[in-house]
Image 1 (cartoon, rainbow, N blue to C red):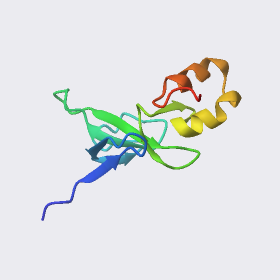
Image 2: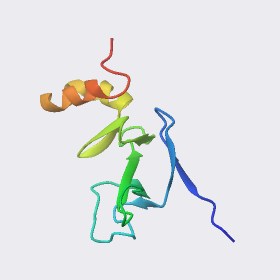
Image 3: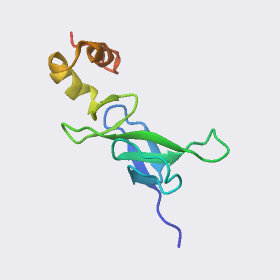
Length: 106
């Protein structure tokens, strides 16, 4: 019996892709340790199927977000939450928040 594929879906942009592992240390590359629990797939552009991080869960609201709609600064934060805490982030990180999809608040 074939396993039903697990699907990661970004709550911000609705990008979706099958994933093979959720966590910090992918079974296919035990020498690699991510700094967060993340959704991992095999990179289709490498011959040895290296792990590729699709995204993770926002540390503030727990939404699943892709790497494009979020950023990682000690923890993964989605664009919506990042904009709400922008003034408390280091100045260098604030410009990253402005570049997230949805842009700077108007």
